[in-house]
Length: 387
Image (cartoon, rainbow, N blue to C red; front, side, top):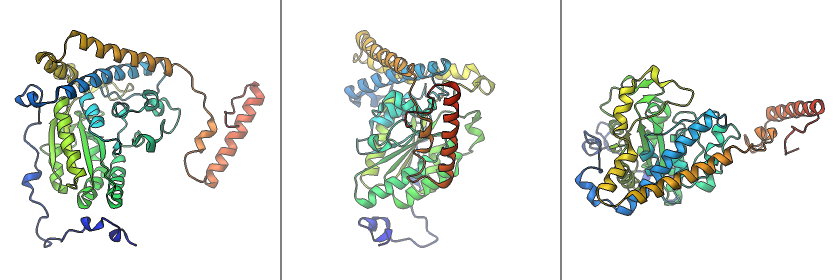
């Protein structure tokens, strides 16, 4: 049986138009000229107050999580941390719009999205600590591994979503990527296949202004990254990435469209990376402080807090409760990260292939000899718990 003969495959075989004729009218696919906003507009009055309060609590927790993780790098407890401070609205919205059966495909900066989806905060940092390949079971949490290669998660998201559709599973994949990732070939391949297959995928581009030190203007001359969607035959949405309510609405609509068979959507969230690329980066070499300060006036936490307090939905007591909950999370994270993990060096070879290759077996044997020699020399058992 071929792929095209599988149940549900007929939906992927539309009658082709003449070769010269465009497949889709581009006009409905074009994004709005300005990023969509809710907070501070008339649309805010229609937003669910309970949803806004939940978004606020998660934003406050997320801001504290970023600060604590950054502090852990300075204390030597993390090797590196790519902060998403300033981008919390994108991260939280991406996690909250998904159902339990859906899949999240994060980039290396999206630890906060994984935590908001329910992943243990320590497990989300395991990779960045250098302890293991991935600190969690992707199948259990329906979160693909956090990893540093740019945009490689996008084709994976398309493949999973396409397979789910062919099987008849009601599953949506949401794939996150930065503006720098849109310059990778994986971005093109993922969007092209997703549109052709009408795969149930939502692509969320967090345009935070810089690909490390490269500004967006040196990456693309397009009117916006959302405009790139037209070339693939999917709608592009441009949204204020610091507006949590707008992010939740736009992503919810894109997920619903994908789940109903409407195909993929490219969402560009215009946001800003308040911290450096990572703790190893000196952002002052390529951007000025006045630019950073200008974006602080559009802080996602403050935007939502102003909306809620202005409408009488949030008072001093509610603000204090959210901050206290965030502090409790940070304290637990500190305590657990300050405990040295017990690691087995032989685990380096345990999760690479289902069956070890000859080369891996040889490398494992050499490491075992070195560990045994070190043990005999020092009189301490550094050979790992797996011995």
